[in-house]
Length: 327
Image (cartoon, rainbow, N blue to C red):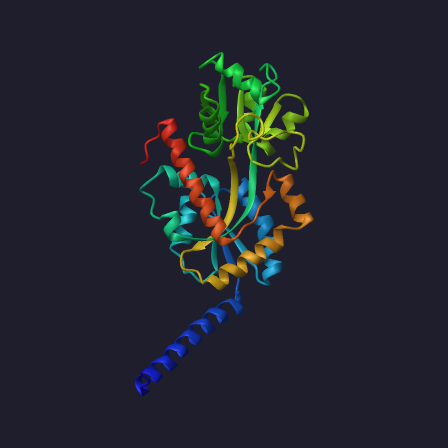
């Protein structure tokens, strides 16, 4: 039954909805009006910092405001991540989230933030495929032969990584788990040290950075057997994937993507997502990032959120396989 009171309530409800959407639209339409800070949790010169500066420069042109890259290295990215997670959710403080930071989030329960709760995914930006390389003395030119060789010598072969609980360590453990082989882990301090260790014969193999391995591949001091992503890599087009080399479903990589504090307006997230996609998905930028060992890969905020969730789950599973205890 119609009443004056019900009519007033409907009118007020309509006004509230209109006001809400007007505020939503205006926040996105006026954004950005000042410089945007994007934090990096790793040292200057590292892969995440270099990728961030390359992308930020072009993204500034797209958004019409400077993007200021700020490095806060330490604790595998946790310092920078906490800084952003506790910042104002207005779109002017962002983080270039790295895969290694999510690895640590999977292994440490006492961090001052929760990746799923405290960060707003914007877009994946690049994937950093890894490459399975062996010393030339290892009698295997294909993954299938390497697996058979390792199974015939349990505990005799060694693989290097860029550090315990790092991306290349977990990539190596995933290889062991899926191939059902016993290969001994030897941690190094960084990807450069790993490839030198293989080239000199100190260790037999590694699933490591393409950028670090490239100089040794071209001189024949290392042999590439496969790349770690589901798709082949533009910088090594003749090298098959582990997925197509007897380990179906193998997919592990280093990656970087943009996030902000939880609670960022959806309109701003959508605007940033579109700007990132338009910026990096050009032949020029793909070429630049390929030289840095990165493949451009953007997605929607929802897809990026699911991607991060899957990464957390996979890392936790690998940690249990290795025997790590979550701190």
